[in-house]
Length: 137
Image 1 (cartoon, rainbow, N blue to C red):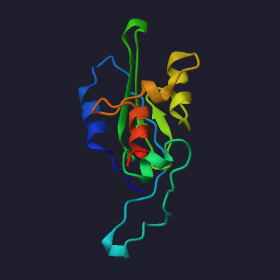
Image 2 (image 1 turned 120 degrees about the horizontal axis):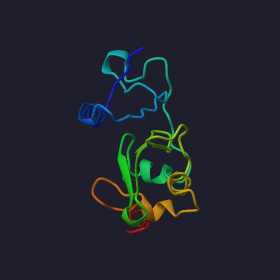
Image 3 (image 1 turned 90 degrees about the vertical axis):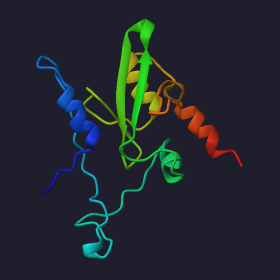
């Protein structure tokens, strides 16, 4: 078994203070293709994205490993989530991945929330703005 960590995770761990707890959720994913084994992943099969984010991933507007942020300054809430290859969101500090942006946002706020409007990409775009791009010619 080998573990591969994204450089942003390593940077986050290095930046953590001595009294800070960093929550890491590991999920099983397929190893990347390798030219040494004919392009097939070792012992795995391709992961097809499913759920509400699937179309954004398939069209290349989101990709596995992308970091999304959520901020509500007046309520003192903020969160970070990672997009998985299968189309789920892993929210830092939460035990289970979420199948939709709104479920992930609701887990942060504690109330029903529109995650499409609340989660933002590293460039500041909302998921709703990305979804709108899908339907533009």
